[in-house]
Length: 127
Image 1 (cartoon, rainbow, N blue to C red):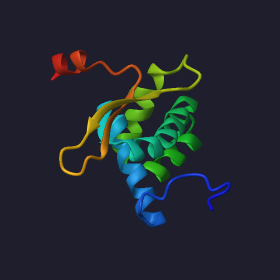
Image 2 (image 1 turned 30 degrees about the horizontal axis):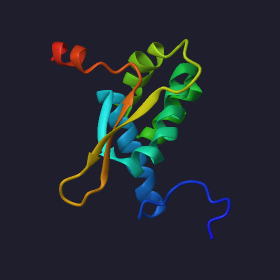
Image 3 (image 1 turned 90 degrees about the vertical axis):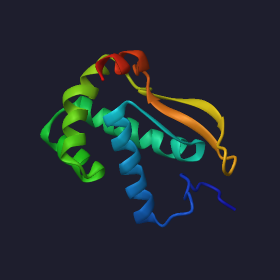
Image 4 (image 1 turned 45 degrees about the vertical axis):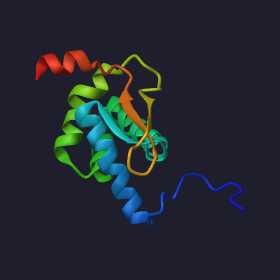
């Protein structure tokens, strides 16, 4: 029984899982929205929100912690310069999960994991 066992394993060992979280959170910060399975989205959502909270703190120690977790200078710079200031007045709840339905190949439930201020129309106009 899994009494008091927090988190999902997602069929991966701990190093692979940690890399998955870093990659998914980095893509979310970089693009504003990612399409993934519901299980992965639910697993990475708290991790991504912690990274945004580090970005809101904005000090050197927070930046170093974010670099250690996200493993990308470019993503951390975007987090601290662009993403975190947009959520400065928000006390939490920076992301949302929008269900899309089953995937064609294996019927896995697909979702968008997106930042709450994500606007696809504005993103298309910029590109």
